[in-house]
Image 1 (cartoon, one colour):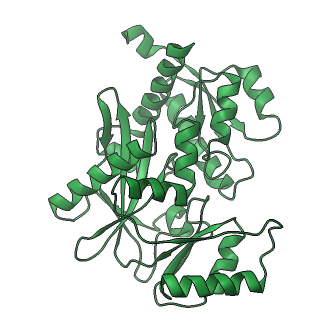
Image 2: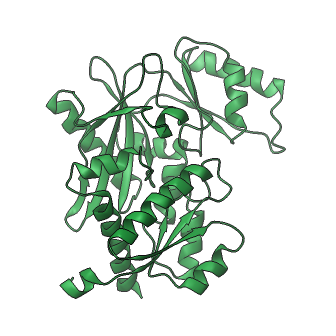
Length: 328
């Protein structure tokens, strides 16, 4: 890439919002991304993911689209396919990688095939009519208790930001937790694993994917990294690098890289883990579009690789732009 190309300002459409349960988080991410890209000379336009989105994009004709989106349809491959049909280059994983990462059960199946450390689980599906009735819940509770025991975590299959997630570290009302989670669609149920909450970002480079330093997420006593603690100022502390043995941190980075490759991730991803007191690792999931808010984890990890937030967003849009130029 020549210096002239490197300095060329790009027209960027930052997609945000939509009907997702994480729409407000998305708009917050979009504001941060647009401000960062504007600061380095790009021409940014925030575009709402609504019925006029296609018309807005076709009128704007951006060089690159930055999907600052969270949850379906922004992360599950739908928006990615939409952008490909319109012929726009975009930041992040393609249709295949986005769909794989969004479905937690499918992703875990692939992780198991690769020998990555994941917990047992079962899936609770919704009936065709979508009704959550007492019979459905009673049958699901019986299966959960028989296969996994009473100490479990219930999480919607296709949501992020801990929306609809209920941990039951000491057992409890599994039926009520399932009712809450099923409002967002089918749910994955896993045994509760007590340990430290850990995350590792991955950034693609021309030499291959590079892991971020390992981050430990610390919340107040008796709390966890739920929706509130993710986005409230001071809700969590990000300890970088995580105070774990070097070999454990190296293993976490290695697993994050393998998970990134296994799910066909592109440009960036973030893997989440639990590490027990005796250093056993459980891979939870991979996020294909990590948050970009002021309290988000991915920018913190990138900063420790030497990328300011403005440099990170610039790097991502230029990478997407070159990819688009190569296929046009």
